[in-house]
Amino acid sequence: MTPGDLASSTTAEAVDAMDQLHGLAMATHAQLLALVGDYDRRQAWKEDGATAMADWLVARYGMAWGTASEWVRVAHVLESCPTLAARVNEGRLSFDQLCPLATLCAEDPGAETDLVEQTEGYSAAQLRRLARRSRRPTNDDANEVHRRRCLTWRPTGSYLRISGRLAPEAGAVVAKALFRLAEGAPKDPATGAYDPFESRCADALVGLCSTALTEDAGADRATVVIHAPLSALVGGEGAGEAEDGCLLAPETLRRLACDGRIGAVAEGPDGTVVGVGRTTRVVPAWLARQVRRRDQGCRFPGCRRRRWAHSHHLAYWGDGGSTDLENLVTLCHYHHRRVHEEGWRVEGAPAGELVFVTPGGRVFASRAPALRPEVRRRLPDSGGPEPVSPDLADTG
Ligand SMILES: [Zn+2]
Ligand SMILES: [Zn+2]
Image (cartoon, rainbow, N blue to C red):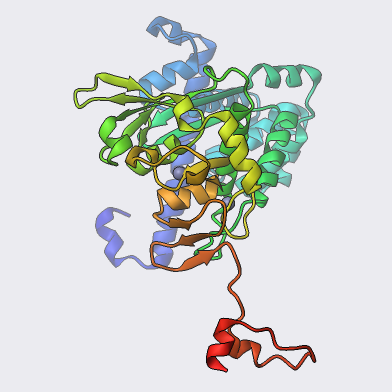
């Protein structure tokens, strides 16, 4: 079937054409893999200056390294597994099915024919599961996994991308800690819904690291440095930059500058450093302790989280607000973000009642409102004297 026939084909004809083309592509792929295996056995890639067959494939065809090394591995398995090779040549396996099947056949070459027949019709996911379970790790494997552990991060525009590899038991510790913290994250107060679980896990990781920095005795080494134009720190104009080059929005800068060991390097319009923010100016440790003792956790109504808490300036210091007990309240990370980036307002007295107002004007007070007189009158008579209040006297 040619593309010109497509418009007039029935669905059955279209499916048949796709079946045949996929089969043909896989049979062709098998021939290509046979050549790859042969080229590798002859180490012909050396003549082209490569250091391995996979590197040669990466350079020649622009493949990802993982795909290239999988091609080379599967190519060699097919050389010694005729039943598997025949199945691919018939076009009856996808590459995603072939990879785990090759792993299974390589582990038990004597059982190749049985394996290929018994797993007929298995999905790629089923085969991957089988392949994963078939392999009993040895101590050498465990040492290799440990040796290859890594964690890397790199800025990509507005994000820091983190990726890594951990031994299973170490990974389980990380996963459990993140899971437990993410489970305890509060709901969005405005919508009453939780953020997506993956987002809460990301918050949990930042929370763990923030706690580690807060407890670090080496204040200088534990300071996170941000670069920002003065106009962003004071007037909220322009973006800042984290040490690794990720960009920060003005309100994020103000939140970071509210508390924590953040050293702000203020820059003039031409990028010259006009001052290095005194981290002590932000909130000295003795004052932060006093604020935390008074507040006993986040001051958002119903929150009270103590972990990953910040001292928020009610009147921002860049706008002339003072750094003292009367201008500071404790907020957890979640609620501190609401106030800065999401535009909530905090009003009231740090030592008394605080009121949080959403950008839409909805009010959350840190104290329950008093029973209104008309509601109180509906209560069954308790026998005691009616409490006297100015409101009750007016209406009643
Ligand atoms: Zn703040
Ligand atoms: Zn909170």
